[in-house]
Length: 71
Image (cartoon, rainbow, N blue to C red):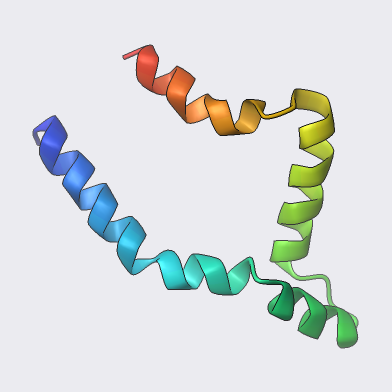
């Protein structure tokens, strides 16, 4: 595949999965899980991001840029 076709495919795929991503990372799902005594994956994700932000700063946001520059 050409590079542009890969980018277009990833863009369409991310657009289609956006609602799923937002639903699982939303605070509503986390609070519903906590009210039932379950730790949701979104809660683990945001706790990990919070802790990693203290260690790496905004490095996790810059990682895709660094990976793209090495190509």
